[in-house]
Length: 258
Length: 256
Image (cartoon, rainbow over all chains, first blue to last red; front, side, top):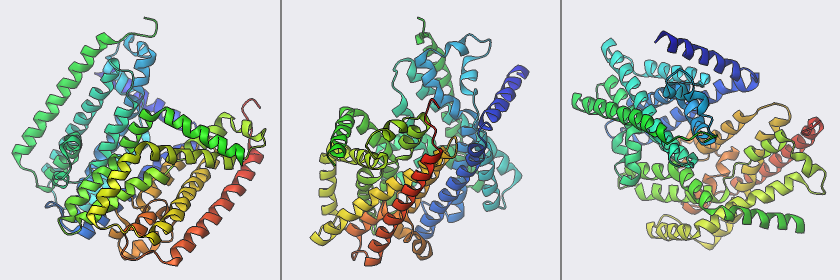
């Protein structure tokens, strides 16, 4: 465990150093997510001012919901998104060899080799918005909220691993990645708002909608225990499937020299 | 003129050669619009849902036709030194790129024409779109103006590459501004009067929601809107040419 933490810290420092090579891009990379954050909050306020309560969610609830979406995605982008987007290329080119030959778990090294440091601050800024907007919650509710956010990150991470692992069987993945990314970014409303969406699209969005709706619902007291238990079961199931799929698919990997 | 026409035809042929890729990318880029279509259908709740359906269908069609992101190609051309190949020829880089990028919406239109035709028929059935001769006449310059504004903004973002080693953040910034203030995520009619009062004078609206307002609005847009459009076209093109000239003075081709 200590060894993996040391590796993680080394990777974070390397990511910061790599980003800081170009100072303008370095500082801009912190500003641009804040602008997107302002735009996202602006969209939410505009919609809720026009339509009032949406599926039982008030303006304040919707701001907490979209901020939870931002927080989960922000920290996920910090932890593993950059690494996972580069992984299909490494698999196709045979560069995965450099990871597999190391005495470290391959999934760990594949997932956490590059950190989006700017997204860490973005995640923190979304958390600040939640703390400002959702006042009056108990410490227990906040702890449950954090745990639910971590579960959401785990579920989304598992989904990304499932998508990336397909590369072992099929070379073309760019479109699938962008499709999932696009759906993730569109999933910022309560589940009921997607009732008129055809099932072909809705089932793709459900995991991403739940990953912000459940933590926000816990913080605001809008979610019952049965939904929480179902959600935990989904997260555990997705994670197990993702890890098994990855380990099984490694057998299909052929390196560049094979 | 003949050389630009030839270049345009070749670009269209190139893009049509990768039609599967283009169609897949179109579907992916339409996902946010598709989701907003259904979310606003829910929000409209039987009163305004047909209006919002019409809006997002038109936004989807307009973004296929005129929303092009030129920044990536142009900044890559500058960064890699390939700009030199244009500078050595009797061939204006700006004109050539503007004409070549026109191949993108043209090829998308050719590939998606059956879908667009079905959508237009569905729009006519919904009854909110006004397909009158006057509106269609006004629509054409609005589409052309929107395309040129989108291209110009892309150039301005890309030309930062003459001064900065990496300028990708500008691409993210101007796309974010276009998508929000252009009404891609939320209809501009939903904006508060104060916000709409500001958005009306920004160039982003002309890339997306202005052509939609021509077809969907209760009345045709005021003359002032077209004056603002023309003013932006002139201002942005002057800026593009001037910044390009100054950037060329700093340009160092690959191999220098």
